[in-house]
Length: 201
Image (cartoon, rainbow, N blue to C red; front, side, top):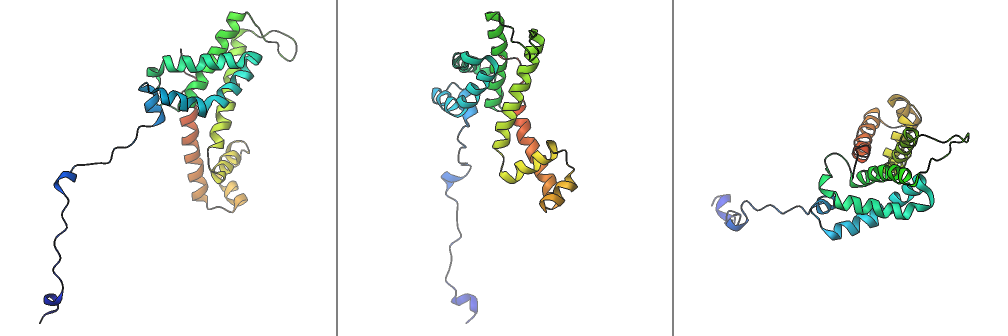
């Protein structure tokens, strides 16, 4: 008797006909649901991003921050079809709206904030300063979303002005890992900052 004759017969495994061509659907992202007009996505976006937007508005216009933040969310919702998730995050897009809404708000109120030397700023200076504030706050939040190790590497590279080799030596980390962290960290930051400078409604 041969060995093969003693083995149990195994039926060939078959994929059910109904399963052929079936791919499990990927749930839509928050951004996709927001653009599609899902009101639950608006509520979720508010819960996620209100702290940043209100904080940013407070820096930009002071005591009227909550009113301005509400305008930002209303404007975001009303112009949601303009948001392109491939160009940046929803959070960054809303921050860009907050930036421009703050300029409109200051113009409408006839306010001209004072510089440290007591001289009124013109609107060009105000817009530039609001842009810097917006970028700093969005960047800070984006950095907080990175892993601790990746954030440390990115901060050393850009705030500490260190080379990859210097970071590798300082952290006792392989040079390839440092380069990978910098590259992927930058990709994440670009995704956050990508649309914050575009003029929004």
